[in-house]
Length: 137
Image (cartoon, rainbow, N blue to C red; front, side, top):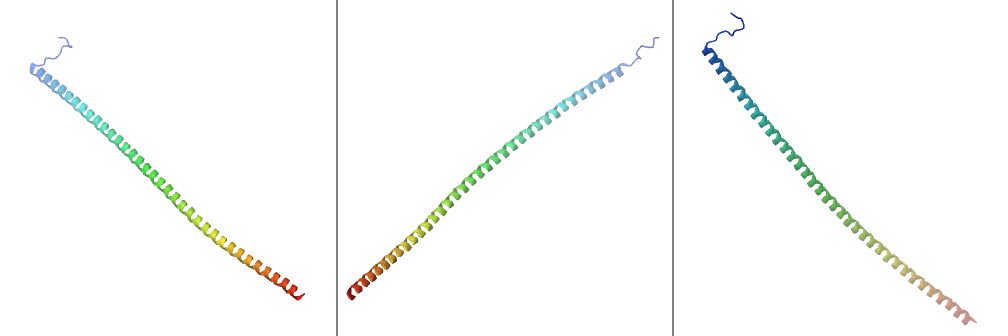
C-alpha cells in the first residue's frame, strides 16, 4: 500500500466538515457585513461631525461680522458725538469772543467819550484863559 493515500473518512465526518466550513464561511461573511456597516456608520459620523464643525465656523464668522458691524456703528456714533461737541465748543468760544469784543468796544467808546470831554474842557479852559488875558488888557 502507498503512503500518499488519504486515510478513509466516513461520509458523516465529511458532512460534518462541510457543514463546519459552511458555518465558518457564513460567520466570516457576517463579520465582513458587520465591518462594512461599522465603517459606513463611522464615515457618516465623521461626515456629520465635519458638517457641524463647518456650521460652527460659519456661525462664528457671522458673529464676528456682526460684532465688527456693531463696532463700526459705535465708532461712527462716537465720531458724530465728537463733532457735535466740537461744534458746541466752537459756538461757546465764539460767544465768549463776541462778548469780549463788545466789552472792548464799550471800553473804547467810554475812552473816546472821556477824551472828547477832556479835550472840550481843555479847549474851554484855554478859551477862558484867552478871554481872561483879553479882558485884562
